[in-house]
Structures are given as C-alpha cells and as structure tokens.
Amino acid sequence: MRIALVAWGYIPVPPLSNSIYTLMNEYKFFLNELGYEVDFIDEKDVDQAIDQINNSNFDFVHLGMKNK
Image (cartoon, rainbow, N blue to C red; front, top):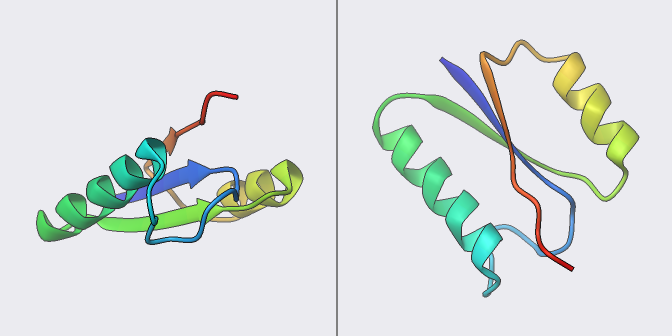
C-alpha cells in the first residue's frame, strides 16, 4: 500500500519540534516498519502538492495541518 503524508512546508523533515511534524514523522517511521511505502509531501505551494498527489498512485492520503 502506498501512503502520502501531506503537510504544508513549514518545517524541515525530520522536525526539530512542532507536534504535527513530529507526529507525521513518527507515522512515516512506523508505517515503513510495517512494510508500507510512505511518501512525505511537504510543499509550501498547495497547487504543487495537489499536482504531486494527483500524479502519483497513492492508495491513501493523510493531510496534517498546523493550527495558526
């Protein structure tokens, strides 16, 4: 199964702090351990992120958003 974890380009991966990025990084690690193929999409430009998702063959897309 191919999974996309999507965030909006605020902090480098792996994260230094910030809970949403820490959580997404942990999701990626543990899903990889279970044998899933996980891509992390971290684009500041929403249109580029959407293009990446639409041009890939993901089975599941998870969107993580930080509160402002």
